[in-house]
Image (cartoon, rainbow, N blue to C red; front, side, top):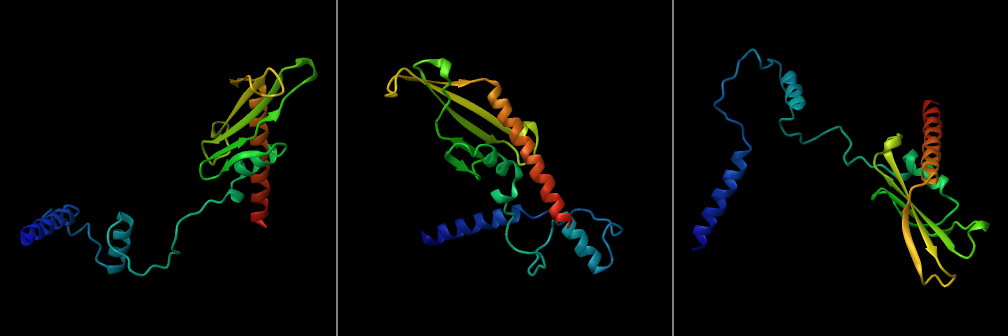
Length: 180
């Protein structure tokens, strides 16, 4: 019984391994294959074939840190007047804590705002970030009877514009520093 399962698993593994192989009986033109070994290696690497055991390339992935992303740094600097409840670089989101947005003319209503910045791209462009503002209106200072709504106002556009301008300045400064 064990032999039967072993042969079945072995044949399954062999089928999976062989399914990745190209047809060995396909027609090839000798004029397409380089004569020199170095040229064949270069061609195989360009086509993504072959196995490299020892490489001069550095190992590891590409890591983007928050300190190297101008859009992220600009958002932190523009929103430094309020504390953050969530600042996740890998998640691409900044969420501020509720902060007071009261003015003298509003009377007894307590008004608080929360700003959310979503990063849709690492590039500095208008569609690379999205700024959402929520408003919490409370009837009294106990904050028991409150309504929360997403608002469309010029504040969101102003914050987005300020972030984009600051990010452009940071990128320009970092490029100047890298040239030196």
